[in-house]
Image (cartoon, rainbow, N blue to C red):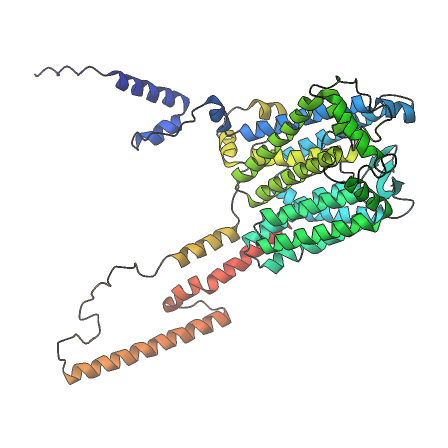
Length: 554
C-alpha cells in the first residue's frame, strides 16, 4: 500500500484565506453557503469605519432618532431660557410657557411612537378621512365663537388653556394623502390630468381656508408641501414651474393685500424707514445676533428677552440662540438641520415603497424649507412671515405635529430593504428592542403593478430573435410551397392553392370564433387561447387588480 504523499506547506495567504472563511462561516452561515457555489469574488469594502457604519442597515433609523432627540432637547432648553420673562409678565410664573411646551412635547412623543408603529397599509387607508376631517376643522375655526382670534388671525381652538391650530393638522393630512394619491396613480400609469385633478383642487381649497383666517405663514408652509409632492412625484417640469409661478404670484398678492403684510414687506426692503415701528422686531433681532459674537453671552445670560425683542421665545428664538450660544451655537443648530436633511433624503432614496419614498422626501423638504424661511427673516434676508423654527420655537400644536411627521419618517427608515431584511433575519437592535417595535413588513408590489410589469416584459420580448434566420421546415410541412429553381407539376400547384385557401378560411373562422367568445364570455377553443391570454385576459386582470387596489387603500 502506497503511503500518502506529504502535503506542500501552505503559504501565509492561504492561511489568511482559510481563517477568513472560518470567521465568515461563524458570523454568517448564509453568506458561507452562498459563497461556496461561487468563486472568491472580491467585495467592495468601505475604506473607513465611518463608511462601514453608514453602510449598516439600521443607520438611517438611528440617525433620524438621534437628530429628533437632539433638536427636541435643544428646543426645550432654549424655550425655558427665552420665555421666563414673558411668562412672568403674563402668568406670574416663569415656568408657564415652558410647562405647556413640555406637555405638548409629551403629546408629540406619543404621536411619534404611534406613527413609528402604525402599519403602512393602515396609514394609507386613513389618509383621505384624515384630510377630510382637517378641512372640516378649517371651516369650523372660521366661525366666531368656535375659533379664537389672536394676533389678527382666527386660526386657533382654545380648550382648557391649550390652543391648537387646525392648519397644522391640515398640512400633515395633505402630505400623507397627497403622497398616497400620487403613488397610487403613478403605479396605475394615470394621465397627467388624473394625477393633478384630485390633488391641486384639494390644495386650493385648503389654502383658501387658511388665507381666510388669515395666516400667511401656514399658507407658505402648505405651498411648500404641494410643490414638494409635485416635484418628487416626477411630474413634468412645466407643471412644477407653472405651480411655482402661481404660488409666487399668490404670495405677492397676499403680501400687499393687507396693511400689516405690506408694512412688513416695506420694512424688509427699507429696514431703516420705520425702525421704531413695524421694523422694530427685525432690528432688535439683528442686535441680539450681533451681541452674541462667536461664543455667545452664555446660556440664560441674554438681554434681548427682557422685553427688548417681541416673541423672543417663538418666531425669533433663533436670535436668542445666536445671542446666548453665539455663532458656534447657531452654526451647530444649522448643522443639525443639515444632518436631518441628509438623513431624510437618504431614507427616501433607499425606500422601495413609492408612498414612503414620496412622504419622506416631502416631509424633509417641508421641515428644511420652514427652517430656511424662519432663519432667513430673523437675519433679515426675507420678510417676516411668522413661520416657527421646527422643534425649537415655542408652539404646542406645531411641536406635536412636527414630532408626528418625524415618527413617519422614522417608520419609513425601518422599512428600508436592508433594515427589513436585517430585522426579520433576527438581527438584534437595541433601539428596536427598547421601544418594543414590531417587525416591519417587506414591501410587496400590488397585483396591478405585477401585472403591468409582466405586460411590459412580454412587450419587450421580440417574437423572433433578430439576426437568426427562420428554421427550415420539411417539404411535407411547408404544404407544397414553391422552391426556387424547381418546377412543380400543375396538380401540385393546384393542391397548394387549395391548401392556402383552406388555411385562410380556417384562420378567418378562428378569428370569428374568438370575437364571438369575447363578446359572449364563452371559453374559446385552442386556436384562440393565445389571443385571449394576451388580450382580454390581461384587461380583465387589470380591472380586477385595480378594484383590489381600491379596496386595499380605500
